[in-house]
Length: 243
Image (cartoon, rainbow, N blue to C red):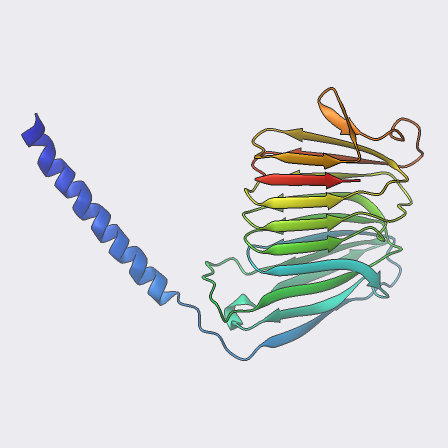
């Protein structure tokens, strides 16, 4: 029985070796070639827009997002590999706007000299639904001054710092899902806050909220006119909620 297994094992090893060679060859063919750094301006006019849905999809790199734009959206997209040029798409239907900024759908191999950064501002006065996907990089989301309706963040292996401190004008929800990275969320103190975490979490550290059954909340949650509901699901290596 052992002698019969040896040829099979050898074939498996040979196949594995061939696969590794092909993968390495593919990596070499897809090697990153850097060039002069591009600083592409991005701008979406405000017009008569009264509501916007914004999708930001980045698999690796740095993302800075904050309020303060006079237009609906403005900022700079920085990259030094031509194939990584972000794809920007926007449309307006009546009072509603849709904005999508995404990294091209292709394999990316990083390097010490590559640059990939989105520095974006959104209008403070327009109600927003944000959908953010961030992979192996870092996202700094300063959202406290925005008029938020809901925020969804899908993480990879990177780091997300989300600052919600401010004076929200309406209740909204935050959903953070997936990934094995780290997330820190700063929450405002003068509104109701409820947070729940489910499944696959490496660790959770909560400051300023009291544990109640299977969730955390502050003393204002059942009495405030404005509430923030935070849900964290699955796979997060470490989550910190600070109120």
